[in-house]
Length: 233
Image (cartoon, rainbow, N blue to C red):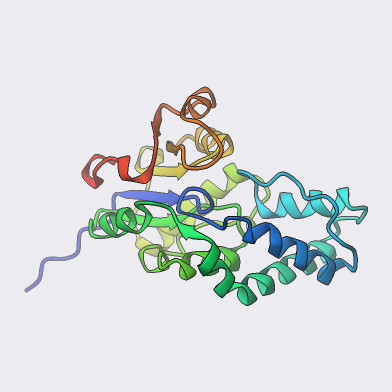
């Protein structure tokens, strides 16, 4: 008789952009194409993106382009963005990339039954899945035990949502010390600190290691190949 599977004890929540992958300009190009489809107007100004949720980005982008960010307008822009990413899978695969060590790190953590991996991203749910599928990273992540930029505008609230979903999916209880958020921006750090969970900040985006420490991260790495061994998480 086989021994029962060991339940997961650690929940690792991954940011996507500039932590696992980078689109190298394709994301902006898709926004430029999707905005007029959704609104009938060109995208003259795009809200700052790094570390923010898509609900927040879409609302501000609509506002600074003279469009009231009603629920209907936000839903229309979200739908156009998802369609844009679907249409651009080939472009994304050719131009973008998985960051060094991303696949190897996900694969190695996935081999540890005490670790459960989900996503905590500002991306729309469908967009996050497309990006991770394009670069072959989706098989290692539980998209149900995750939280996305269309779940809540506040990134810290996404930690609570992901925890609830992961606990419902796995049957495990993850206290704050058992949850590790991995991301590349001060907003990732802030979300983790606000939620009271551990954060590992990775300097693979536009924020330096020193800036991540100044944001409050006590564990900072230069790249995913520097991530501690699974048993040390």
